[in-house]
Amino acid sequence: MIERLGILGSPDSWYVKDLRRAANLRDKIDIAVLSFAELAVELDGTMPCAVTSRIRPPSDVAPAAIDKTPVAIDQLDALIVRTMPLGSLEQVIFRMDALQVAEACGVVVANPPRTLEVAIDKWLTLHRLKLAGLPIPPTIACQDRQSALIAFESLGGDVLVKPLFGGEGRGIIRVSDRDMAWRVFGSLEQLGQVLYLQKFLPHLGYDIRVLMIGNNILSVKRVAPSGQWRTNLSQGSVAESHKITNEQLDLALQVHTVLGGCMLGIDLLPTVDGQLVVLEVNAVPGWRGTAAALGVDIASLVLDTLDDLVGEGTELR
Image (cartoon, rainbow, N blue to C red):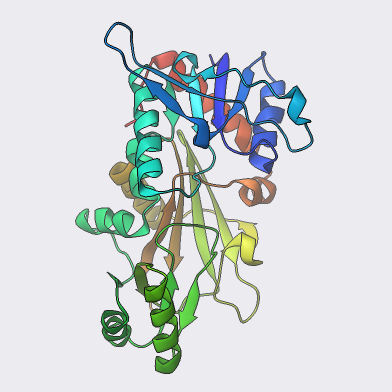
């Protein structure tokens, strides 16, 4: 059973508050909301490795009341990663290193760094899925405008341009005009961005979000507003209860086999020509819309899953 739980996230986020609510429904769990930016690790040859961070207080707490004492993450039962903030290359690599230290100390990390490292990178995720023989949209990544224009034509002249990192549909542009493509690709090249292009696949006005929490599999249909192609809930789509088909379930389970972890949000797209493809996989999945649509206490399922893993002493694979 979990007694000491750390959450790397914002204390003001709905998800942290929902986890606190669920924790209050059971035996006391000591929850510490921690900062990615203040992670630190220690190795000195005479003691086991140690990893620490500091408490992130809610925005309405006065600075003078903030406890600056480092929290020993290696002494926690479990650690939930609820955010993945931007940072320099060194910072991102170090943060993954710190999570690996926590995991090596016996802390159940959800999701584990090996899953996060792949899932936060859209290109790497699709590459791993493609190697496993799973269906994905035709995708090209490059670094300069000329290459992107060639890719634009080879993908049919109608593409989605996505940030390599990020979620909730933010920063995605649909480009179906060559002059506009020239402008967009040039701007991204000047900003030093990777140009990540994905063929636009005409769909039925919705996609399927499969949420895997331990052994629990939940699914909703995310219906886009009339005339829109974005199906992200944060972009105005509506979540509806959905009975997952055998084909969708089998594909989601195969995705889990490739990426591992105990909390995955898998986005599947049925297309107008009868395909079913994996759009993206989120290893820090939201559940607010799914919980509301299905009437399920998903935060409690998260805690139940961590209880099981801590009780088994299982390292997530």
